[in-house]
Image (cartoon, rainbow, N blue to C red; front, side, top):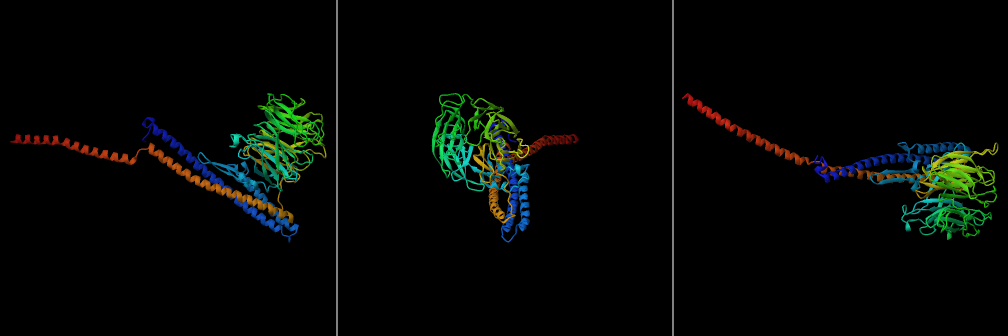
Length: 621
């Protein structure tokens, strides 16, 4: 070694240590990439088998769609068709690497660290993840069938932070969805560092929606809360109401029959807004706006109302209807106080939830405390127990809690379930189409949607009962969920706001198993399988591109590893050839010196011997 301690070459040692570190990073990067290639090869092999299965199922469907077969004969084809469906699901569920499922976990997202940079495979972003649950078998217990097909749509623009969603029906009878983008300077590069967009979607039949456009609700406004309002009572959406965080305004936009959004006007100006909802607080059949926040010139957080005129205009807020509720009220809802749900607009009692650290409360504006315990993140209302009175579902800490109405403005806790992590949002609806209200909740810490089913035996005991169903993974950082019948099958589907990846997720209720036991079913299955095959091919193409990137990155990492090692060696190690030549030169010189010295040592001895010889001769003579 040329350098053994810092004093030998301080600068050289520092450079050497950095080069050694970089070399080790590149060594680890090449191993990471090798693991990534192994994973992608496994995924590619699984997808190849899924293509073969889907192709065979399409062949069977095409055969069953032929009119020359009877339904009895089609049953034999259907047996193989369904068996292949089970194998399809088994392959998806068992394709893993290092105990990590490669398709179900993180929606097909795989991140490989390649030395200070990442190479990402994201089937969800490409739409190729859709095939995962398209062919799932239904549960034997049809009462507790949850959600199946999951679709993701990019909601937020360059700011990428989906906050809340709202659902309704436009004038043409199509599903209408809006989502707010509340991105800040940390997430986007939009004007002023804040988003100002609300995105809308319209159902296009089956299980899909299409983008409907973007609505600007004010530069740097940062829209967060959003509601849809039926102005004339025909069950169709007429107005969109948004509340912004940055500018603390309430905006009302007109929604056309075709879903177009226009004529955005500011109807409320506040200092701070922490929550907003819509409800009929005065019982006149017209939607009013309820806001929790601070007005200009007031440091206290209060509950305000802006009474609606039914035409998209609203009165200015007057004095607070509830003063000094605290700065931690981030959820508010309107619930029918007298227990009548015959008129959807007869909602008079305002319920708000608060949180301070890990604790929180649910209270009414008339002073009743409904719940006190964990931090409250969301409140939903609806007739859960089926007695004709509106009840309350609360997301509190890790729990979903149900409080049933006593019919006099008070509520009693009837059910609770621990979901194992923070419940960030929930909604009430009929998920399984049995006429009873169920609950869906989103959990933000592990990106899951949970289902809770109403299992009340209405024909016998009639005792209220709820049962936890199941869960599935959604996008990253879900903050809100709404239940609405997106595909028109009589079951409420889930529309989810995924904040961290800027998407909305749409999960369809019920397992829509494909069959070919009739000609019509065979024709329908053939069309759906064609879509599935397209999705799989898209995913396979994405994996192929991913592998190509990994192979290139591997070559770069190996070359960098070798070059870092060579550079380090030039600094730390001696020049062996130079030192060997120097050693040989010195060895020769030493040998010469030894020879000369030896010869020099012999001269006196020879002279002495000559003198002794002369002395002996003289003595003899």
